[in-house]
Amino acid sequence: MANSDPAILRKAVSRLYNAFRESVDSIGNISSIDVSIRQHQTMDLVCRLTEEKPNGITLKELAEAMKLAPATVSELVESLVKKDFLQRIQNPEDRRAVQITLTPHGQTLLDESIKRVEGLCEKLLNGLSPAERTAMLGALSKITSKL
Image 1 (cartoon, one colour):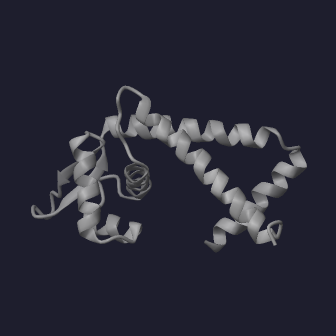
Image 2 (cartoon, one colour):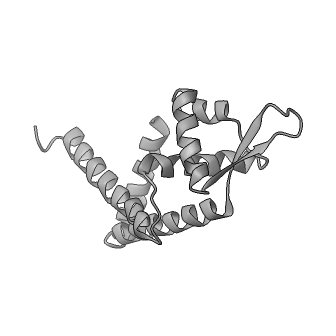
Image 3 (spheres, helix red, strand yellow):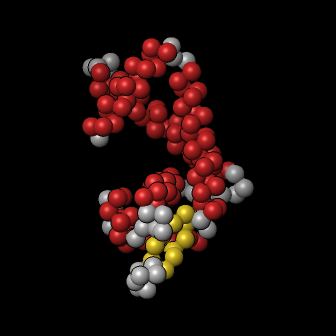
């Protein structure tokens, strides 16, 4: 049973997760930056969501996208605001509402982490033949679409 398809996939996902986590964790060693995986995921999501809404997103939108309680997301956002990775901007149309965006400092950190993760991906893919690479990426694309 240890060599069944699900077991092989589980082991691969676990090892990939750990490799990516280590890659992102190493960002914390740059210039005394202290960022957790959850904080990094939050910044990445804010970046992706603000591609469609460049003026920022609401806390409610972020909480819904993260599938977390607004209070939990509020704490994450506050910690990232204190570190100058995220900023809250008053909504010009509704003075009670705030929009959340990345700061330039947060964007720089995110860009660096993406470079590191992409470097890891290239390293992993370089050991495959073109046919293996195409097959693996096609299979991963199908798996991802089912998630």
